[in-house]
Image 1 (spheres, rainbow, N blue to C red):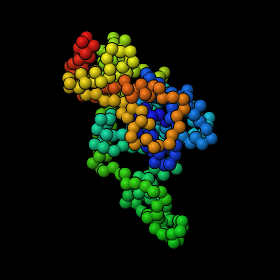
Image 2: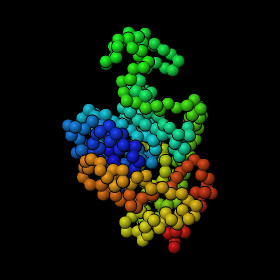
Image 3: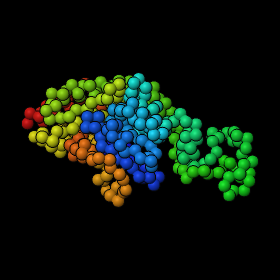
Image 4: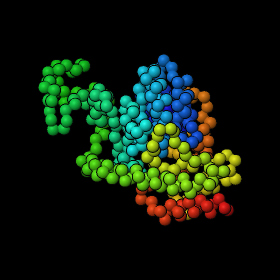
Length: 321
């Protein structure tokens, strides 16, 4: 996995008492350097867990080959990338498991929450168990005894015939979505194609407006055969630029243009991970550069053409100072 970005790819590893193996990122895609993954694999390696940063698909072709070669689980953090494609197929459908986020800032929202996707029947049952307090029973709500064995099985040290509805095979959580949230999600799904189209349009407009400043900025780049559904527009300040990230971010914020860092930057340097055990393959030079020099602006579908012109105009004014 990577340390550059949001904690969601790192925390589950630590929460399950496993050791994260961290690889650096590519500066233009902000995704894992896929060519370094194989060097990181050992006999103890169980899975490859990567995000598609800001909607930009990782190098899935290389990653899948390595996962298959070493019989590893592949988990996609697709929270930034709903609607992105690689070789014509949606991201979030390549891994054994993938996750999506429906937080208000994401491509679609239910107010909060998210989803886990899988095509594997056994993984589906395990995921549902974790969702429902760790319950072993797979019956849908309101449908008891689907298996016909509710009172005729033996589990652990429980007495024979103990009600399967109250047998717990995992230490789980209560993560069920409400009907109202689900209804909002369904309505949002219908709008998703328009949201994706608008995000791509806004990204293209920002790229066109800022390309002339590549002397100072490293602008985002996609991998071959990918079609991003952009979550944001990342801008990396070159180390030799005559201004700092802080300089331009403060100027943008002063002019009512919201900015964000690339989430946690280098997570290994966050306070929460000071005493965490992890293994780094190579160095994290690019991750550190992103932590120090990168910020991003939104490509929210509701941004108007006039607002885009205003934003790029503020960049122009800053550069001309």
